[in-house]
Image (cartoon, rainbow, N blue to C red; front, top):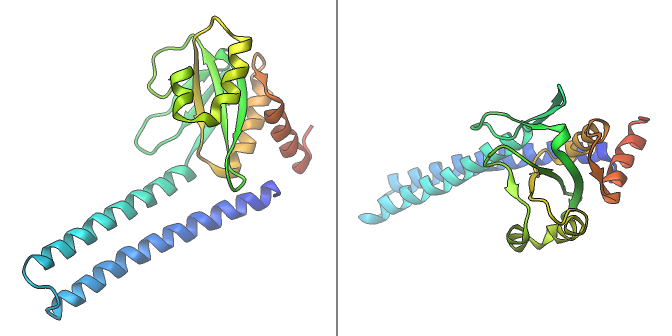
Length: 204
């Protein structure tokens, strides 16, 4: 699928899911209020119904916040650093470009993919996860990346940051990393994604 088409799909999907969530929230409150006015609920049933609606609406609200947060993901390069803003509720953080040693892609369903950024010698940061066998057990999708790194960087403690948000905009972020991460090795799959972006947008 063309990147521009994916971008349009991402926007339409966010709008559709946000509108659907808001509609369900309003509808549930309205229905429970009407049923309560008609005396359908007896005794504790009334409290259970409103509690149930409250819990469901809270979950739907969290989903809306997640959708908006994904849309606001930012990756900016400058002064030999990558500045990433990945959440409404957390401050941005930086990654020094010279600390990035490897970048790969993990493909998911429905044209989704993740950018795996591998680093070494980092300051302590909860957003950076140690890329070891324990991490791989949690998601075997990263096993291919791990196997390559174990063969190439046997004696190094490696850490990762994985870009999961931003939908098809990740093509652009991958391109920025490719143009600025001079010390990093890119997997063949990552290079293929960069090439796809450059060809569609006529970049050299």
